[in-house]
Image: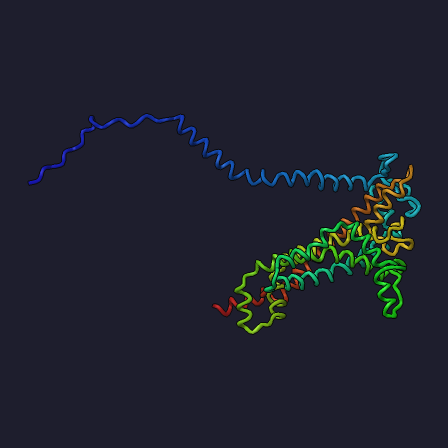
Length: 360
């Protein structure tokens, strides 16, 4: 016979310890601070960039838009809404007056044509060369760091220095290029007097400075591609060229879009290279063969300023027209690049849906 368990005597149990309310409040407060830190800290860390952008980027953009609608001169200041004048047969003040005046200027269209010509001659060869150089640097080379740092050296050179050097290389009378051409029995090229030749020379300066920079960006993206993909392509019998066209380029699509958009912005805003290439005191050369939109803007706003003539307002209108053109071209480049990259190797939606149907 076993003894029945003895029920615990409740009267002998020790009382629960008293609640430490101060300690609980401390824990609660610490938890709140932790949640607040997790939610707010990321925004605080990135807020300096947006504050700086607000002061140096967004405010000048909005302020320039306001000036573009006004008669604005450094001497007279704000003189009301802009007036197009005789070109438009209108003396009525209007916020579109400066834009109408600029669009009636032959120099603006000439500068826009020159900007597009130099942009196409510089951007397309630059990106193709950067892609090829990045593919070569991605291979198993000796002294990789030396070669990779070497392609970035031209980017370190100041634009003004590069412009001065290349203006001597492409000099009409005693330049290196013409000396070589003369040595092999060819006619020298009038680099400053010919429109196409001057565009080629300026595009060469741009390509010299920016090809290495874009090469390193594309190289970093290439190295992020999983090597398993290339090994699978090799197993399928793809050669190096086929791998480059069908694997590398489609997987570089986001980086290519970034490079093309930044090249578009820089190419259409080109200023230093044509200014230093000419170095004649007249923006764009005596015949305006290489007058770009940025040079036209600077000349209109700061060289032609006279009392009573609202040139700063008209220069601001040119700046906003250039901004709109750059945005439109960047969007077109983005759409075209995404289309080309998706159709060259990446599976399309139709292919994906076909694979799903087969899997069922």
